[in-house]
Amino acid sequence: MAAETPTMQVVAEPRREAGMPTPMVGMLLFIASEVMFFGGLFAAYFNSRADHAAEWGPPGGHELEAWPLATILTIILVTSSFTIQFGINAIRRGDQRKLRMWVGLTLLLGVVFLLGQLYDYSTLGFGIGDGIFGTTFYTLTGFHGAHVFGGAVGMTILFARASQGQFSAKNHVAVEAISIYWHFVDVVWIALYFTLYWLK
Amino acid sequence: MSDQLFGFVLIGIGILFVLAIVFAVSSRMGRSGTPDGPPPRGVHMPNPSFLPVAISIAVVVIGAALALRGDYVPANPWIGIPGLVLFIGVVIAWVRSAGHEWHEVEQRPHDDAHGH
Image (cartoon, rainbow over all chains, first blue to last red; front, side, top):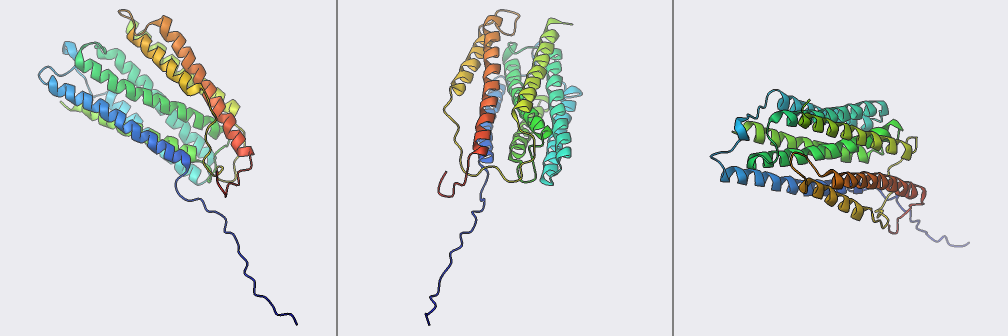
């Protein structure tokens, strides 16, 4: 009778996904660099403001009114942060139809914001070359507008991919990454809105 | 309509035009269907490409057009339009290239338990 040799079976456990997906890490690093970028612009604004405190403000006696257009644009952009978040909640449940709807609505709100900002520029009455206030105002809002445009490009790609059903409850890291960028752009605008339109 | 408002209207049309191109390219590039699992594992480095250099050159050319302008015009059109065309062309090429790379990664066996 042969003695039974005890054997040990090694079962390899399937490797679990741990940590943050690479696209999310990339997006967070990118946003960190953007924080530095806008921090520099805000620093330039406040430094210029401190150096020219006596004559600070729009040139030529123009007024920078917060109401109605700037406030409406702020409401539009803040609303768009909610709509993209609703989209993320939808795709986390696997609801592709709702994702398409919310991403499309976010894109629409972003485009309306951009067009509204262009209209605002056309009615201000001063340009980027009209004094230090004009230069800092257009630099800050212009770069922010460029970032909104970049976010709108991202939303367009998301919308196209969502229309093809490329996202699922398990695979939607692109939606999460773009939404973080969109929230960041929204927060920057809120800081700009209060700095430029309310801080007298 | 004032010249200034007309200029901003043109910029608005340009924004919508670029977004429409992005949508068209993204729609043609993708593959229909719902992915069942998560994205491929591991770190997938992009292929060598001259596109980052090209887009940097395009941005410098656009910046030069904004700086070297005449009076009463927002930018020098002789420099700005080629720069804008180069920029849009590179963006489209980059989006297409990224899509091809992604499909290659998806189709490649990516059981990378021993490395990436």
